[in-house]
Length: 251
Image (cartoon, rainbow, N blue to C red; front, side):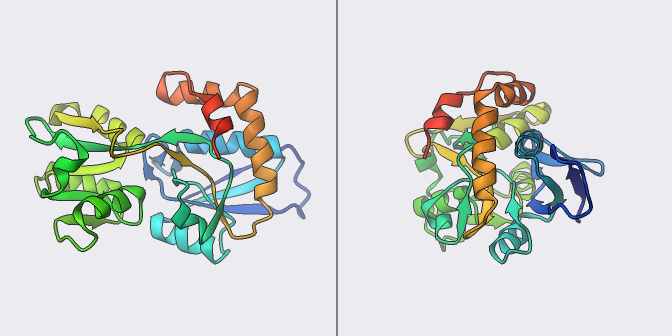
């Protein structure tokens, strides 16, 4: 499914202005998800503000996770916007914008579970989305070839596997786990934060190596962090104040 959203920057459209192609995996509510035929979420509002600040036009398309990674890598798309954590491993293949969101991974279990920390997952059945930092973290804890580490193409499938008792736990980014638990109160999910084993991560906009877009995005991101726009959007989606200084200081 490829649903698109086009945003206009400060410049008027003259037919010759570049329209940047942006890919996303719209299955990460509240960061990016589908509302009927529209892509919505914090990332979507954030990126609209960044592109307006930079005076750039773009088209946002829901491609799914793996196609997003592939098309940004080969330059078919100019950027990826999908709660992408900046890691040293990914930096070998991609460039990133400056950090724009602080995150960590979180465990989701059912009420009554004996699981209390990430290390308790070592001998359990665990669902993650493949090629994510949750996949990397759990591969380190459980072993990359452990058959009990179940890898899915989206967090939605990972959560559904937990719901039907196919696994003991699911691991994903904190905002996504909290939102899923909040939206499914009758299922009595429990969220577990483990800062000792799951460190702080920062999201960045995913870019092809050597992208000229980075020089345009970075100042715009810094500007909306400093002028209050970012805090306004963050409060809209999460109901609390962000630590913008930590983001400005992050490397």
